[in-house]
Amino acid sequence: MKIAAPALAVIALVAIGTAEALESARELAELPGRGRPTLGGGGASLTLAGLVLSIGVYAVLGWSVSSWTARESVALRIGAGVGLAAGLIGGTIRAVAVRDYVDSIVSGFGLPLELATFALAVFVVLAVVASALGGAGITWLSFRSARKRSQRPLA
Image (cartoon, rainbow, N blue to C red):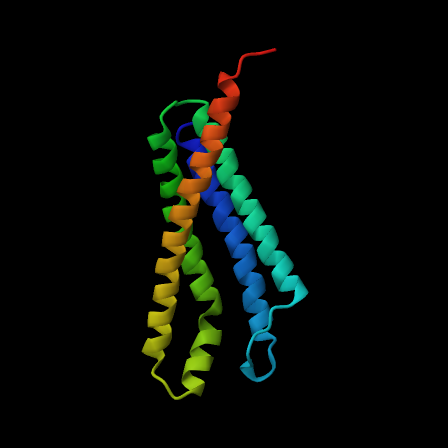
């Protein structure tokens, strides 16, 4: 369970992010003349659903970790590690999914394509940092909640 829960969490988070990325790439590809993207109801709903599902994955991870350790530092490290892995894999998948769109926008302004590569690399780094921080925080909060619940006396 010590390895399975974090591995399953990474897989679930990457799957959630990939579904969002593929839908975003599809919506961007449908824009006339590669125009400016707008936030529509479908995109906002998909983003919200992805966020809720991701929080759920980290919450389940925290509860799982609480079943085999009482150390908060372990929950923090596992949450951060899962976030790092999911952010790196998922961020890279997202960057690849929108690469054509970003390339066309950058080249449309007559800028070198290296700028698009740099922007997407920064995006991946930010995805890793955000996932690691969010994963550590949510996993830790869930862990604490589970530990407090298990320490309550039965009435």
